[in-house]
Image 1 (cartoon, rainbow, N blue to C red):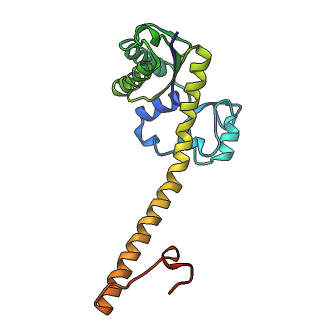
Image 2: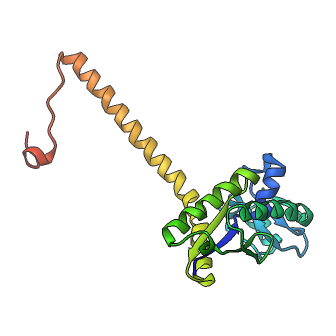
Image 3: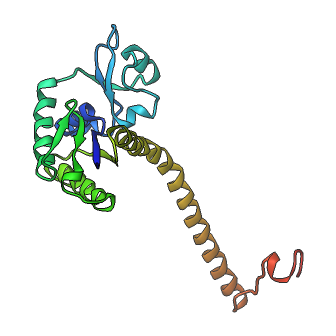
Length: 211
């Protein structure tokens, strides 16, 4: 048995971003009234950076991120997008079991004889969904529904972790680039002043403190 669990990433928020592209760069919360007893249905990754998550009270979400944009759920719109997603999935894997608008199971064993092929099929599903709906989804493959769901959750959780790592990694890369540029400028200055490039050595070449 080879089964995959599909989970559309931040589905409600992703649909709202497609409908209103200006929301993509803003912390977005889909849920109830933040000044009442509303609850967060989902939040985009910009909002999740502030610790906002599903089932949190909207009042708490507003406290954590006062600049967040709150929109009420539009289930009829989400159902339409969900319909397109699952039609696309069935074009790759015919047998599916929907467990909600944004998740379900795929009988990948029907089209793949081993897990190596199953992984390629899962990637084909992701590519097809992205191409037809502009939505992203996480897929976990396993020998059972339980294992597949754990795998898809791990893949989904890796997205915000990657986003959090992105900024410091970019700063480190920029810092290394700036350091290289400074060294090149220093070398050019030394050549211009003395007519030749100075001979340098690290501590490991001649021993620590060697001239």
